[in-house]
Image (tube, rainbow, N blue to C red; front, side, top):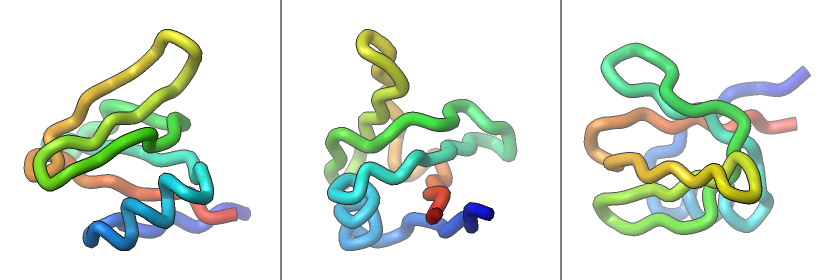
Length: 70
């Protein structure tokens, strides 16, 4: 059963990127993205890819990010 872990620090985001954990993204208490993997991040933006041509850009300060740890 997967556990959800909130991503807060650059180290958290880097680990999720390296291990290709699926993530859930929430904005204003609504889920806006689910199941994709982080392919890039910086201080202001997180890029999540859900499929070959499905890429989403999320503002890091406006969203909450959770990884599903297996």
